[in-house]
Amino acid sequence: MKKYTPKSADAAFQYGIVRMIVERKILVVEDSPVVLKVLHHLLSRNPIFTPVLCSCYKEAESKLSDTEETYFAAIVDLNLPDAENGEIVDLVLSHKIPCVVLTGNFDDTLRLSLLNKGVLDYITKDSRYSFNHVIKVVERLSKNQGIKVLVAEDSSTSRLFIRILLEQYRFNVIEAENGQEALAKLEEDSDIRMLITDYNMPLVNGYELVRMLRYNARFQDLVIIGLSAEGDNALSAKFIKAGANDFLKKPFYHEEFHCRVVHSLEAQEMLETIRDLANIDPLTKLKNRRCLFDEGEQLFSNNSSEMSVAMLDLDHFKSINDTYGHIIGDELLEAVGQDIRNAFPDVLACRFGGEEFCVVANAGGLHLHNMLEGFLDGLRSKEFTDAKIVLTCSVGMCCQPKDSFEELIRVADNNLYEAKRLGRDRIVSDH
Ligand SMILES: Nc1nc2c(ncn2[C@@H]2O[C@H](COP(=O)(O)OP(=O)(O)OP(=O)(O)O)[C@@H](O)[C@H]2O)c(=O)[nH]1
View 1 (cartoon, rainbow, N blue to C red):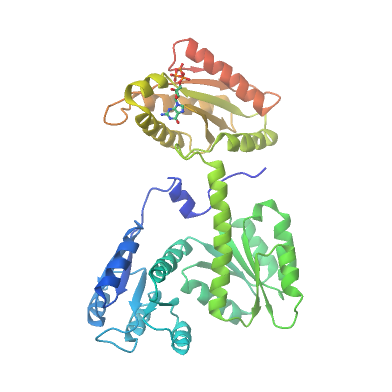
View 2 (tube, protein in one colour):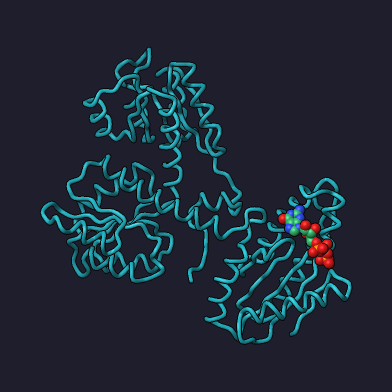
């Protein structure tokens, strides 16, 4: 069974695991006040973006001359009143800022020349969806920054070309000269999210590499794109049958390259979001009961003799709901979820149901007992919400070896009832 961990920074944000927000300034150069207003509104909806608005070339030039400021990306109107021939694009690119071009009319030749210059996208202002598309491109850039891509390719020229294309989209790129080196890098660095691999490589070729990776459950979420020189028409199917997500024939046009890279990544991210939704309790942001049993059984099968389990249940929670209402009750559960994540950082901590939680440690009972004491002390000394509500919690532990994971839970649950019977706010353990 698969161990669940949120992979993307976005998922981590969504589930409240990452709290720090990094501000990213987006330069917007556009002479139409209406378009400026729309872009400002759309960008401001994402808390990490700070739009910096300019209505002409001169204003943008002056902003960019301030060397203290760094811009994450720029959205520019191609035809400005004081720079009618797209000079703004060269200005922005000369500062090495990723640039999205907005234009009033579509011109295929101009579009190609701009993309060849290194512009990320060329978008016509023909409907309100165009502006959403611009924001999507900038958001994608922001996500890409945290994504490590391994390029496995024996030709240094090709490797460099692919690196440049990926870095244009702000991916974090690492390289390997052959399949064997790629495999070693993937084994040692679990942060690599995507592999772009050539077919013809010494030692281990791209096809063998993909097959080896897909045999290993650890690499099931790795996004793989195969590359090959022109000629072998059967190769694309071969790569995809071996488990690659997509395939590109060289020489490829860089817009197609980016589309395929982003498309494959987004498909994978969607899958992970669905998995997050299936595994994380939305209120407490703790793993849910189904995840507890999946991961708990796995821990048990790896090391059943050194396993300890605790069941935690908030005391008199019904009277808190009755006194303050369910909304406040929910706020408390949310805050307790955060406290549990903080108090048990390296162990499996889940919401078992209602106001009951379960913590599973792959270690002896003493270690878990100490962590639980710390958590209960923290809870007693805290006042929740404006109503200064004090919470306590009863805990049942099972630390003696048992025949199954379910049996560990059952014994911990019995001890929890004993803790309640003895007056609550305490730990009852079998150690
Ligand atoms: N607000 C809120 N309340 C919940 C949620 N899940 C369960 N509860 C409430 O938790 C309370 C649990 O009550 P009981 O099982 O009677 O236990 P208790 O009042 O905590 O008493 P002891 O466990 O004996 O200390 C019930 O009132 C449930 O409605 C939830 O998601 N939100």
